[in-house]
Image (cartoon, rainbow, N blue to C red; front, side, top):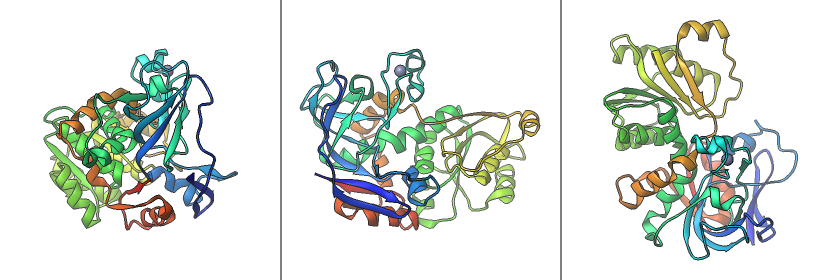
Length: 338
Ligand SMILES: [Zn+2]
């Protein structure tokens, strides 16, 4: 079959790869309904993460189970499933606490930019729907697998509450999903920090009340101005650069939580500065598994439409263009038809 392999910086190819198969009794093999390119795929694509050997790309997925290993009991062939990009057993102490992305058996999904994929730890990772969903909901169900789950976690970690004020740093797909999550959680004001018109419009559609175009110090000043000098009750950091992290912490009011889900690159914090700033930080890879049942339900009942975040839909064979479009910020997020 065809699959997506990253050979080195800016060298991603759709090429012949081995068919996935059951390797352990806890595995499942699924036929994907669609796949997509993640913002985090940009780090190795841009050469900011070293690529030492060809990497099978893709960790966002939903589709129909084709085959399960002998130990799998909760999903069966023919069922439609959504899984998390973090593979987890969902039984260890960290899983039971809702931090499946720190599972003692944690693995990361790979090879999902392809028509079929192997999902290890199928019982703990996959959630099945009662019936096959209609085709028009596939993009939104795919979004649940990572980008929405991650934006949702940012809002959850930042303790967004009904009536609160929320600042979202980053207008990539995750940031936009963070806006949607904050809106669903009842935030009264949502400041989306963006200077890109198409993304501003989508942020407004997802529930942002204000657009802040300033960045860095000026961005922090703008949030302060909009909150009578106080700072935001919750801040979502969805980029991962030093500037974005500093902006997020400084835009938060004392006592606030910053939910940070951008993978940090070059972020260093001074201990004393953090001590006196009196803001809390919780982030890391999102425990999407915790949110899957709720988010799938919100999609199936058409209460949310996160699939709108895919503004480029192309065949898997054109995956390289999908990466380039995101790299050059011509696309917010690329859906791959498999
Ligand atoms: Zn676990």
